Length: 85
Length: 447
Image (cartoon, rainbow over all chains, first blue to last red):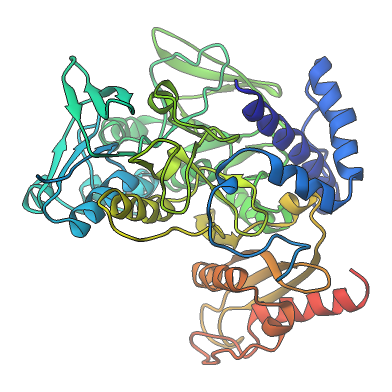
């Protein structure tokens, strides 16, 4: 899998799983998804996710915008959050 | 000489593209290649025929094959395209025929993510996609006593409800802690879970599917992290992934979601090659994060833009706000943009307002509950997203709120909006306004 697809798939998976743990606890009194096993899963869960959550939104937004994808081409739309017109 | 426009794929995007191309340039030669037996039907309706809400599959067809012949669109059924050459401007049809084009539209759709576990190759695992396979499979359900639905994706929710309606003991297995957990919030889905329980659905959350067990191509059970579930039928409803093998081999640029990179004219990275539907990725209007795997209406609209562009017309598609809605269990659920789960995952700052209202006057027969949850940007209070669950009126509210997100409407605007009050169709207090008032109060209280 090309690097940016691998990056997107994993960041999405582990950030969502972390959010689902928080939300399941908050609303359902249920545990979250069981943690995946393996060294890479450990790094995504215990290194990437906490660091991502510590960064300010403006920096996270800048990193997201710097990734390749359709959003880098010409599109009409509104300004992202935190950058109101 | 007439412009030749080739469309690869006969789903909503491909057919939308072909129709728009012909409308833009009536002299154009428009040829659609599809590997399937049919075009012009509603695959989204398949679960409702399985659930017996719709009596026959024939009702899902929107047009006959003759309709396309009469409109000058040449559809080649059961004809696979094996390769695309963007520099030579040709496609290779299975069997070796080389077909030239002036403009190409890639509308190759999606495939379900491979569960990647033992038994995934069993022949009678069922996937909801092709109407002919659905017609062949439907009689199997008459004899089925126990069904397992793998993953609570949108199609998984519809199939769970359909099978339960059909009186089949239905097990829903998902590795996440609630249904549609990558999109919907748990408090929105809780009424759905309760209604499934009333219908006899057995839900297995935080549960991994580890293998499909069977012999001779026939599945007999599903092995999960919570134990073995015997099954007469298994429906696999994993995530939709972009079907981009041809495009990758042709060297078209692919984005991080696996979808084709396009611009607002639906133009890809190659000259005179356009793309539309589930094989593409689009920027989300609020976050600007590329998203993929949207609804049939998105695919059809994108097809219209791709077809117009391919025929030399001028039309654009805009970044998506993603209004969505569906029936699940005894409820309608829906939303726009994103909810609390996604905002929490991306750590997007938000203020939130949640309110429980009603769909009609409280004394009017069949009045239904409506819960509205609004997320707004701190400070500006511009609407970021919404989620809803209720007995009626969810789709209309999702469409309205999508326009609100697009236009930058604020919680203040919504809190004091005018609304229809008529006992039979609308309550005195609109639930959206009530939620916005709660959001304003939360904002004043500091979050």
